[in-house]
Amino acid sequence: MRNSALSNIISMTMIIGIISSFITNVMAEENTVYKPNIIYIMVDDLGKEWISCYGAEDIQTPNIDALAATGMKFNNAYSMPACTPSRTTLLTGKYPFRTGYVNHWDVPRWGIGYFDWKQKENTTFARLMKEQGYATFATGKWQLNDFRLEPLAMQKHGFDDWAMWTGCETSKDKQHEKKSTQRYWNAHINTKEGSKTYEGKFGPDIYTDHLIKFMRQHKDKPMCLYYPMVLPHTPVAATPDEPKAKGVLGKHKAMVRYIDKMVGKLVKELDDLGIRDRTIIILTTDNGSAPPPRGVIGTRNGRKIVGAKSTETEAGVNAPFIVNCPGLVPAGVETDALTDFTDILPSFVELGGGEVPKDLIIDGSSFAPLILGEKQDSDRKWIMALGYGSATLDDKGVRGAKDFSTRVIRDKRYKVWISNERQIIRLHDLKKDPWEENNLITIDKPEHKKALEKFQSVLDSLPEKDARPLYEARAANPWDRNLIKRKKKK
Image 1 (cartoon, rainbow, N blue to C red):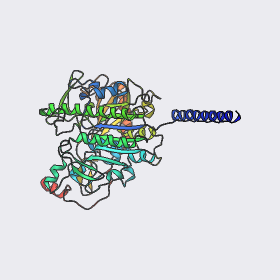
Image 2 (cartoon, rainbow, N blue to C red; image 1 turned 90 degrees about the horizontal axis):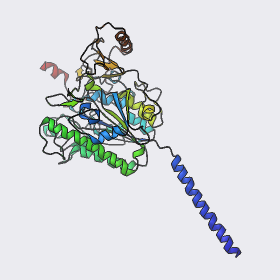
Image 3 (cartoon, rainbow, N blue to C red; image 1 turned 90 degrees about the vertical axis):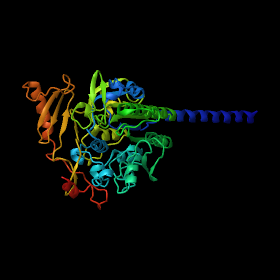
């Protein structure tokens, strides 16, 4: 009897220990503070007039709309007006006047002037997030380095892995050059294994699948994922879902629907992996839609919108910007808070629990408290966009087309346009005149004077000359743009 009682006591003690251990583990799991995953999706050349939750009437984007309905939709988010300025700005947290990328510069197509990882000023959010323990990945369109010369450029910029369209690699071998232009069908893509053509494959499927593969491999640690889509940049293409799409407009619509499909595919994958409620999705675009004849005209809230890429208008730089994460980002919120692409780097760093290094100069401020529901507004009093047209060359290399690039600055109500001569040339009251049809620069009203004084103060704080891109000179390549030849052509 004594042995039986002792055995029962031992068994009961073991059971209590197991239950106690289980409860402790459950409580530990509940109290675990996860660093949120971040997926930054940036569509290439698409204005609000092509996203239905922003009032687009010629298209339906149900998956994107669902992110807005269950998340936070921004009305006043600025991209830069063109590809290169937008990309360098969001990567570095600096306005283009600091990085020197004040105009578009397509490195693999034009050679010199690459985005140099050796320059501290070019530090990317990927580097900083990696230092905080994040697994980092990029897929889609990079454009800022030539992978023939810099096969590990992405890694040096802070990405653990990648799958990027190479961009058009100008070459004496015209067959290679033609092959490298393909971002859609027969896409030419660079990975750690090198560059190759995916015969018969549709690029957007490959980019998305690479991202999903990375998510599956790293789902148990925090991830910072950068997806600068190639869609729907020209040249337009038929998609696997709509192979018979015709004309620029028909193919453009098919491409936008495919963007929406890819967004839905990523959201479903997050659900399947069980990490949806700790993954912050940000969806935006790098600038407005391409204009005709290669681009399109869309209808938004009853008004025809001509593609406004590379223009100073709101349709050119006021980008769609949606943030979503169930249980983390408040649902069904529409905000007039100001933000622009300089805010991406500091926001990511704060979301990851870190701080921007004190010796790293940036122009943005974090919107993390806003998207987490801790504040009702951002800290921004004004936002800015600059980076119009293409860069040029001189005897020192690549530079902006002018010493001081044109730009626009706005607050929640007023907006000014600034010329190459550092002069405010237009003032618009966006509440009364959202389409910027009435220039108030000569109207003598106190409220206008006050607005002009505010923006003049911002303008006065900016450098008189834009910086040049920081990069180390390298040996000339056969495909580099040649200043002497260009002068002769003139």
